[in-house]
Amino acid sequence: AVVSTQSTGMSTAADTKSIKSVGISLEATPDPNAPKIKPYLNVCFVGHVDSGKSTTVGHLQFLLGAMDPRQLAKLTDEADKNGRSTFKFAYSMDTTKAERERGITIDTSLKQLKTPKYDLNVIDCPGHKDFIKNMVTGAAQADVAVVIVPCATNEFESAISGGTLKDHIVVSGVLGCKKVVVCVNKVDTVPEAGRPARYAEVAAEMKTLVSKNHPDKDPVIIPISGYDGTGLIEDNEKYGWFKGFSPKGKDDIKIFSLEAALNHQTAPERHYTKPMRMPITSRHKIPGVGAVFAGRVDSGCIKPGSKVQIQPGSLDCEIKTVEIHGKPHDEAFSGQNCGVSLKISKADDLKKVKPGSVISEAGPNALKMAYGALIKVLITDHKGTLKPGYSPTMDLATQHVPTRIAKFISKKAGSNPKIMAPDTITKGDAVEAVMVPKKDIAFEIMKEFPSLGKFALRDLGHIVGIGSIQEKYTKEELASVHNVDYSTDKKKAGAAAPAARKAARG
Image (cartoon, rainbow, N blue to C red):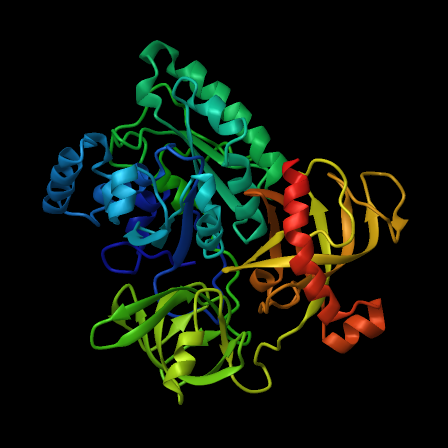
């Protein structure tokens, strides 16, 4: 396969040595349907609050040439004025007044960075538990999760005991990040003589945590200092005592930096030929253009002039413009983040399009709304037993909707026999059930559109279950197949949710 370089977008035999030096695999087989552009990779940075995610992304941005010294000087002045001099790199991602005053990330932010192999769309996600909904939206757009974990005294212990770290790892795996890179951060805060031992301790704990809670059983783990820049890119300082990370069974590969770890990744399969689907993550008002809706194209492609339908709402409209990182494009492909403006017959209908809406191609391949689903779900973390009528929040793609588990079909725990029509379920149970959302939500069957068919269940700020959509039901099918009344269930769900939350709080 031909691997692109940063300068020209093409490579020659002379480039091979330098490409291998930053951990790039040359074995990938090209997709014949792939667009003739430089490969792209979507990367979300996740982890517990105050782990150094924004600082790491900001410094990586500077070292890879996406931020010039004048921009850094301006951010340094602003950080100094706010009495937060160590936040200068974080300010490149945390741009709002509230984020800078509080010193935490509240919403996701997106930056484009370039390595010799990839154009990276880097998504910085909030770590505070109050903003986990925003973190879910960010992870839903990513291919790879970079987990930032601090090794500073007591900070790692805080992150793994009751923090959001585990939830972030679980969510990233459920929503489509098949690979993980773990950056053990803040190594510079550990006394020099104790760094190798502290890194080894944290790395071992993280390998176990990721292996138990994520599809990636062999995550890349490296030591870094997001603030000092150590271990971020190949052409920069690294820790001399670190002997490099080698993937299982590939001792000839040594990964020393975050840049090399990202170049080592293989971009996931892109669904270029499937019907177009694009969940909306945010809405912006652009002078001269009007409302622009941002999101990642999950499948197919989107281009100006395309006839589309938006759900929920069954709004028929046309794509007016397509932009990628602020620049007009003739087309955006599966896996690319873009912004689109819409041509719609009724101006008031534009107000109905919001984050969580899903754009699909019009016609016979349009997304069809459903009012219930057969789901498979694993209860990962919940105290006590759950009964039919349990009403958590469903996080699916960029949508966050209260939902009701109306009926349990079966459950199975470990090697125990399957139990049909159980009265209760509990932590560790693999459950087949009927789900009825309290509000309209656009979803698909997982085997047809994976990113719109996988979800996490959230209750009281924590992930309690992960699952997938197996079948979609109309109102009539809910009644005839499962004896579930849609209208009654919505009413019950509205009454049950506050009671369930009250009971959970004790």
